[in-house]
Length: 153
Image 1 (cartoon, rainbow, N blue to C red):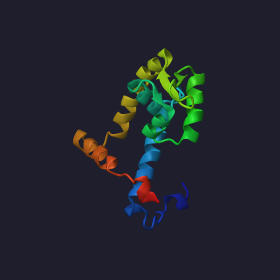
Image 2: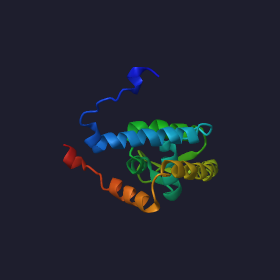
Image 3: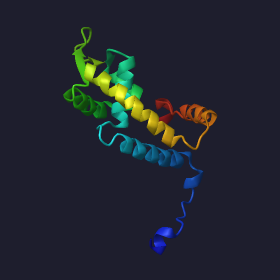
Image 4: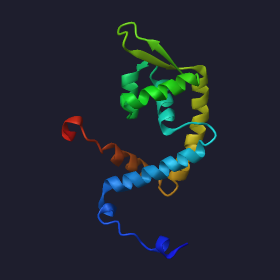
């Protein structure tokens, strides 16, 4: 290691910003998730989509995008990939021809079952330093962080 890599970096105001700590935690979580699913070609977005579709059969693309925090321009390529892998099926809406309803295929359900085992291991690792009470508190606090569209304008 060089002297430069050992020297502390002055982060200025960053250590006092919630967004900085959220981003650093997100990087840690995503890196471990990628490591856990290296051989399965599953991303957090794929897992989220499969999980939500399992519990909400026939959900529209718009509602899925909202539920997993993706915009439509990101969701469509994701769904194309899932459909190509035969994990998700799209069915045109009978009420609104511009809309599709989404369903997990049998292969999608099988992959989700396998993914749950990996997610459990992943969650154990990233939460190893927290008690169950701290984990519940962290989830509770994170769920309070919201900015409405009206506030953002």
